[in-house]
Amino acid sequence: MTSTVRWEDVVERVGPLRQLSGWLNALPHPGLVLEFAQTHVAAARWDARGQKLEGHASEPLPEGAIIPSPVEVNIVQVEPVQAALAVVLKRLDAKNEEAGLLVPDPVVRVFILPFETFPRRPEEGIPMLRWRLKKSVPFDVEETVVSSMRQAGKDGKLEVVAALGRQRVLREYEGLAEAAGLVPGVALSSSLAAIALLDEKGATLLARISGRHLTTVIVKGSSLCVYRSSEMPASIAGVELKSLMEEIFPGVAYFQDTWGGNVERARLAGFGEREAEMRELLGSELNCPILSMGEAHAGIQLPADAGGLLAQNLEGLAGWALERRA
Image (cartoon, rainbow, N blue to C red; front, side):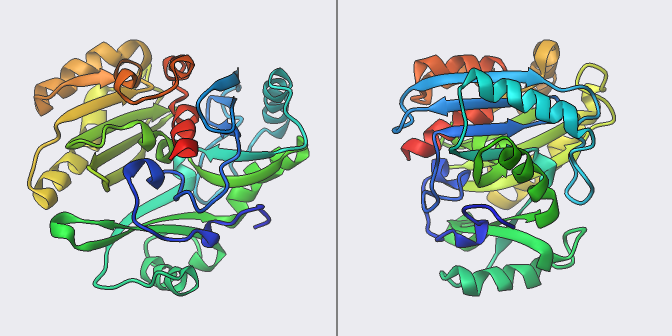
């Protein structure tokens, strides 16, 4: 992998939740960030401190241009993706600079693993993770890029959050950025970036739709408790919402059994016109406050001009700003 910064170069250390999604501040965090999704290409530019959104742009993609997969070719129709990227970058006058990359959630596999002890040096920890996960991913772990961080699990026991991506798949996205005259840097999934927007008090569930994928996240305090990404049979407009509940509730049940508590609030993203329906359905089961990410952002200390990103389901780009300020 030819990224300016490799995931293996991360220095592991315990940090607050808002550092988790950027795989910690040990990595450079450029002001320009690109998001490649099944439905669009988007970008945002933040000032040096992540305090001000200097500009953002989004361009839709034709159906089938990007088909997210952890294994297979993702950029199925190169030309329309290149064209959309060119339009976005022109609007931001972006060229000859480093850029962070947000890739579709299915590209990055996330695991939460218990350990008795775990090395703090990446050159010792990464081989251990590859050995541990060699039967858990649908590709050779030796051809992956791996990032990890330590966190406190239930009762303070050691856990390691690990993210794996296949090199050849990540190179597809890096190659698009390079062809557009940019230097690709940090790469992570959009929902990992969006985690920075979640409340660190108590237990919070995020149900996020992007294209035909549902990602379910539960965080408690500074710990990532649940992370699941599932492919839906159709886009949110045509899917049966009860089937989404069947994907969300195994994560909720696991959290309740493992952490011994209930979800205290839920956040929805990407549900569009079906958000009210989903809010009612989820609320009847969880019996807790449920808000859209846009409604909830007022208490996140997010720059005021970034609210528009949440309204456009670009929460990954908004989360990037909090990572820059952490």
